[in-house]
Amino acid sequence: SVLKSIAENYRRLKKGKQKAIGIEYYNLLLGLNETRNFKAAEDFSGKIIGVDAQGRLLIETGRGIRCFQNQEVKFV
Image 1 (tube, rainbow, N blue to C red):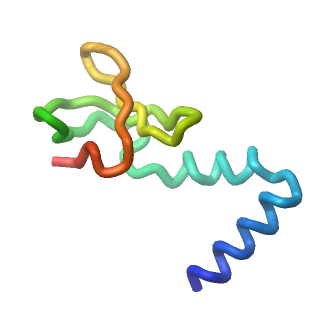
Image 2: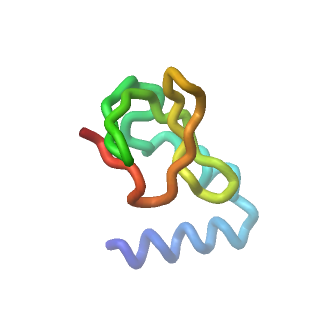
């Protein structure tokens, strides 16, 4: 269940397993390192390259790396 998963990850976090949790998170990012079409204020293509320290999604485009908060960008 979701609650069990949250509890298990919380225990791992308390044990200092931040790096392992971060690696798992990156491995589950949909579209990681794949060129895709996105919609924000405008349509654009790019590839998700990770997240920054503030939790913003990093997308590499032809004009550089752009950062997006949760729900600011969508797959098209």
